[in-house]
Image (tube, rainbow, N blue to C red):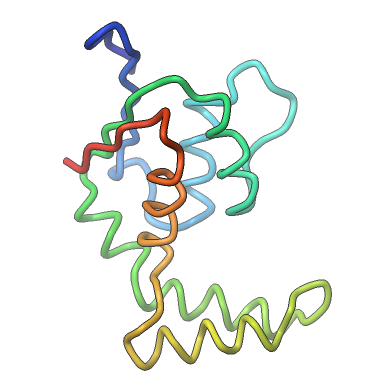
Length: 127
């Protein structure tokens, strides 16, 4: 759903459309990758597509997403990477997991927000 506001497109990420990271990737692929033959499937891939986005983003149901993409899912995300091992940097991921557990690390939701906010051409509105 796109609306013209301040001469800039508005793209809406609907938190009600997903409850995990894979669902988030499907949602943003649907929104930003309509004419592409590949889909977003990693945090780096999500960051990459935002370089070509010239749109403000409203994240509807962001509180639901904050809970869905919170501690439990993030812990599982890191544990899966550690279990798989290569090509992942297990030592770095273990540190991120330890930080998460002791309360100083970021959840997947916080990582996604940080990625979006690192793109100066995008204004994020949490709704």
